[in-house]
Amino acid sequence: MAGVDRSLVAGVPVFAGLAPEQIDLLLQEAQSVRYPKGTNVFQQDEEAHSFFILLHGHLRVFKLTPDGQQVVVRFVSPGEVFGVAMAIGRTTYPATAQAVVDSIALVWPSAAWPRLVATHPGLAVNTLQTVGSRLQDAHTRVVEMSTEQVERRVAHALLRLAERAGRKVEAGVEIDFPITRQDVAEMTGTTLHTVSRILTAWEAQGLVEGGRQRIMIRDPHKLFLLAEGSPS
Amino acid sequence: MAGVDRSLVAGVPVFAGLAPEQIDLLLQEAQSVRYPKGTNVFQQDEEAHSFFILLHGHLRVFKLTPDGQQVVVRFVSPGEVFGVAMAIGRTTYPATAQAVVDSIALVWPSAAWPRLVATHPGLAVNTLQTVGSRLQDAHTRVVEMSTEQVERRVAHALLRLAERAGRKVEAGVEIDFPITRQDVAEMTGTTLHTVSRILTAWEAQGLVEGGRQRIMIRDPHKLFLLAEGSPS
DNA sequence: GGCGCTCTTTGACCCGGCGCAAACATGGCC
DNA sequence: GGCCATGTTTGCGCCGGGTCAAAGAGCGCC
Image (cartoon, rainbow over the protein chains, first blue to last red):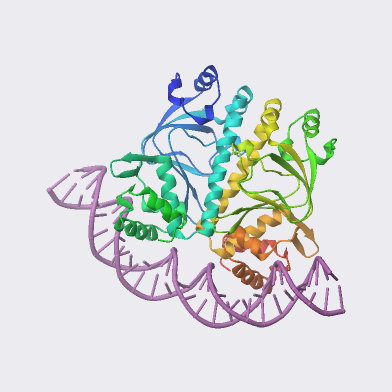
């Protein structure tokens, strides 16, 4: 519980530029909590009681529409803050965060946020940059969905996944957590059927390699060309 | 140039909670600049030299894709900050801001931002909330584009426009600036042809009333039902 | 006050990808 | 090691809406 080691959050962007003593102060108020695979860290529309930094594992953040469809907002990797609803002026979480593998996060009570930013002004500035880059991502996605057709959107989605959560292996870059065709469909605004067809076609060309809840990119460069719409 | 009156920015959210003297200090560093209809306040990929608050008029913010397509990110109304690229850690503007009518904005040099947030901590907190609510909007849009078909997306877009930039008139709510079918298409990821067809159909039902660069919503409630997918 | 540019409407055609359905693989669990 | 749940593949038919084309309509400008 108490006494989280500073080294755990060495490279966390949201703490960038803060003095080590400041970071220690912040960590003293945090709890470290385990979230077994499949459990929800928080749920959409639930009161935003806490905010978090992921230490270990991977989360899938998704929104549920009134008619029950899911849309994946993003995947969270270690070192990222999440659940900062309170900081952006919301009282409830706008989405659900679910552990796709056993995960561990640092947890702060949302109520502490105003005091923390008052004491550590750099925190607001850093969080602003984090939220800002998410805004960029979201806009990129809007542009892609407006102007690209499905195959290129899927290519872009995989490239981003590989960049943020890729693990280099002998034969390419593998997504570092279990991910289904359905997940990719929910990231790109299509159906699992279409994703499956696309991946099968790519596999035949040696672009990617699939498997159950597994995607490996064998030829990132060719995939990139495809994503950018180079006429093949 | 100097001596912008405080009353001009009375209700501006980004100044919420700041003391009047603080606001005066901030205003002393700003310039008031006119942007005639059709001119660009800033351009995509240009160095982010300034940030702004719109005093008068309306801006259209759009992204240009490599193949020349435009996607409308949002419309800016008076009282909103924009061009805060620097604050979110970018050195260039991610989009172009264009005056759709003669407009006036307060302009600060981006270089002053770090000093301003250091002096006025509330500024970072307020900006964080502003950027956060834009993130919400962007995610809402992603969800809509993923799960709704065109007609409902257009309905949602018009309702948002009406809410943010609507002017009540006798017969309904009119969008308070010139807006083309093409603009609506670029907000919703469709074509002007499809938007035209939809508006024509709605007009026949008495839902909206069109015109050149003009959209008026005659029956917001019915439009809302349609947007939410109530089976008509 | 008329010319021309921009915006809008409307028609006809066609295709990307969604919906539905069914078979098939894979891995966890008892 | 076999069963079951979950995930994946694949075929087929269809349709929402994009594309191409061309004809109106409104407005600003000279």
